[in-house]
Length: 607
Figure 1 (cartoon, rainbow, N blue to C red):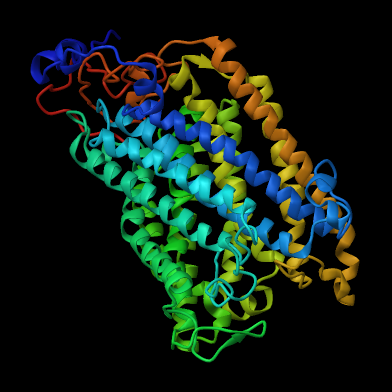
Figure 2 (cartoon, rainbow, N blue to C red; figure 1 turned 90 degrees about the vertical axis):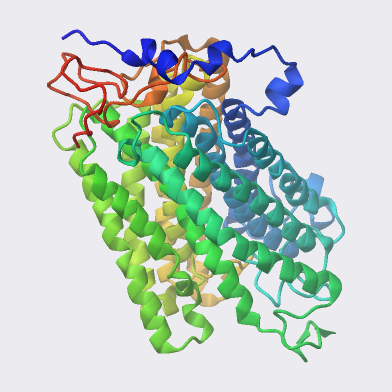
């Protein structure tokens, strides 16, 4: 059936082709690629930065794993260089810096910015038919506000006293008093400054994303014609806007307590390590409430965009419409809403009222319901589909399977009696790594391969990508699944040498197996980065739509030029019209106009 696309000949006439007549002039290299206000360049800047930080965070993790597998033995390669006075072994105080900064880097400089920063920036205008973000200069600042955080986090290792060492949660009183270890150095203050700058970066981005999605959608792009990627980014931006100010305020309070002698969190009369703490009357649990009011929604900030991207990839490579589009939108909204009322499940062992604990327990378990809806709908999309096992599809299936494992362990932890036993054990470590690495990063790996052609006009190697996926998938499960066993056995988090407890000494061989697996997983990521960099210059060149996908970004050139589209696109349907009986191809672009359709009132999408 022949089709026409009126967006190509009506868009400029009806809506004005600003890109063709805007008088755009050439700009210099620094303005174009460094201090760029183009959302695509900013997204790629975020992507390169987070890939660099991924290796830094991974190196810190391998330091933690080395100590747990071979306590007090010389660390290879860098041990004698960094710890000469310790015989090349990791000193106990440095171990606490390693796990603190590993979590800090991976959460604040990798997962959040790669999802909201890299893919949010690159995809939002392209998928809704806009020429850029609503506030381009604010968008540029959202990237550059991240670099002071990089400076504070990385630079803290080189100041007197070393980096932050109170855990990534920085609970007072460990973090509040500069006269007592482990927070006595400048590093803990630099940690607070870094978190503040990351918070400002995220808030600038969230305002921009909400404004752009609400106000700048192309003609015909109703809310329920948006791809799930945009819904994930939109809900994430709302979460950031409401939750981040709480963490920012808490960070300033702790900063003032450390530097100005105020007392928000430290109780009066407390003595730490024979050093007097503040004389004020702070409430130590106040920090936990403020911190987790942000940091539990942050878990969804770190996975909801990946859920959206995986939904798009699974539908594309199943060659089927997304099963239950509207329930998917409602479930992602329900997950975000419930995420705001469950922060107390991180505090079950803090002595809270049992009735309050029961409330947090029930509300936490309820998150399993919308999560199950999403999992069911992903499986429903796969069922009976013409599945193409591309690298993005393999990583998407990996995302779903790892999300199920992490979600099931989360149900156990939601129960107060169970959590009391496994709290602060390696069961918790296993759970959040299955959710945030096994799920989120596999979603990111798939998204990098899926949208790489749109970013650079070339394809990444499928062969190398599949080797990277299988090595990462196997090594990941060998690394983190045994941690469930460690946790049930009572193996504690954050201790540099737990083996002097007789009931834990037999767990050293399992920790060694985990460490070998983690080393394999770390080296597997060189395949990803090598494939990524090589393909930018030598990858196979492709056209606009190498995956035969439906959403708007695939109607733009690859890579998109200034303004993204040659003319303003007009949207006639939803983003998942695969295997449509209306056309001979197995895909139907959102901008494709069929002669029998009423141009004045684009038909609602059939989901």
